[in-house]
Length: 357
Image (cartoon, rainbow, N blue to C red; front, top):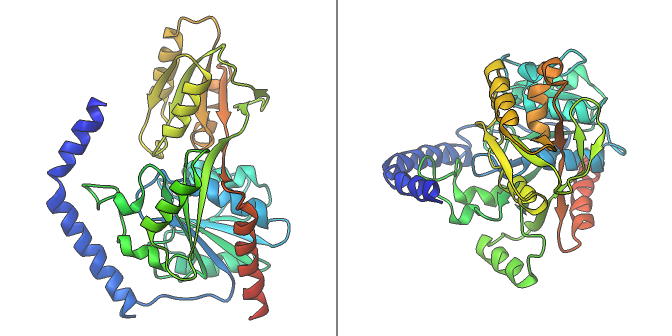
């Protein structure tokens, strides 16, 4: 609590820089709005998943959700920037790819959906034609974290905003977490309030919708985080959290709050090692993890990490083989019985696009 108060107090001194940042993104957006900077369209459905803030809203689980509802009926692919990878330019994931080659989130998609074309490229306008050349049968592309990259115009824009930090209440970097104008929400077709309290009331839902003030044609949905059963990092054997084992949580994601809430619900105490978002694990990190794990005195103890962190730990398979390391998957759960409505909007977009080609 003290650290949060200190952080908020410190951010007050960053307001002048935030105003300069706001000015920069305001000018950039104006140039796109006035068509001085050009946006390119492509002859196939492009679905963009993004947000107005930095990290932590659940973009990767939303991309996975879209893959699940579309993959059996359409030939789809994903295209990401490949943040913090050690390569440059366009790349298509293959059997030898690692998180260092394509980034942790694309690697996660590649491992979870065998056969799904997973591509990365900083310049989407360049990467899309290359992807279509490599995979000419693709019928739709999911653009991961591309809402701010206006050089490509997506036909369906989905933006996510976190329930505990709505974009309407946030401020611009570095004083806040916003990396785009609040008014940019008007370019979205679908707005999803993520990481909600699963028992959020209809009254609160309507209050948030009123605060967001959706424009005609925009749809607002609400999701909660749904954790699946943990599985062993190597053997994939399932493990049920029952409160008997003391947990060491390893996390290198932007916002581990919901995972910490889960552990608080299922365990009396847990230990936590937090790394920066998209952290590339090193041998020294493994030593730190082992040291912290040895210090836990409980006779029954395990290590828990996220799927995103797990793909960055794969390179240490041999070193981690003797540790009870478990991975916990996460999904979006649509509230108020609106999953089917959301699914239909996405599927209808693709079908309508194909009919009008």
